[in-house]
Length: 146
Image 1 (cartoon, one colour):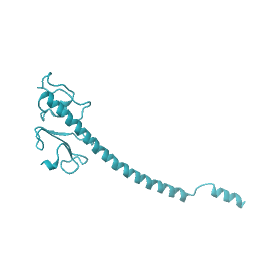
Image 2 (cartoon, rainbow, N blue to C red):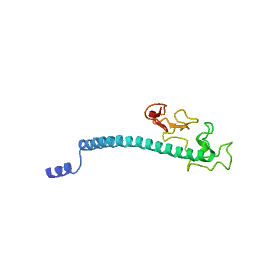
Image 3 (cartoon, one colour):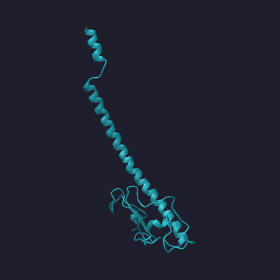
């Protein structure tokens, strides 16, 4: 009879062993989660910089065709839809494959014409914190230029 008891005990895991495995899995999941969260933030910054470059290129194409940049009132929508006051023969848009009005964090892109930091226009995102100023803003000018 003693042999049967030994076989039964060694056939399964104890609650302590299962808890230990769960704790280890939890720690590993926490480490991996933190690393992926950091990568997600970097990916959004990269996406914002790419959007900014796409918007700048579209602005240049618009300027070549219309011989001016969109007014502040027309905004970035002028890159996707022909604004009032622009002649049909001048506007050769849309200048973007898809309408871009928000940055990767869901905040609207900021546009100013004429620009206060650039000779042409200012285009920027408040970045991850959604607030103006700070090192996280994505903008079409360098702070060294000021």
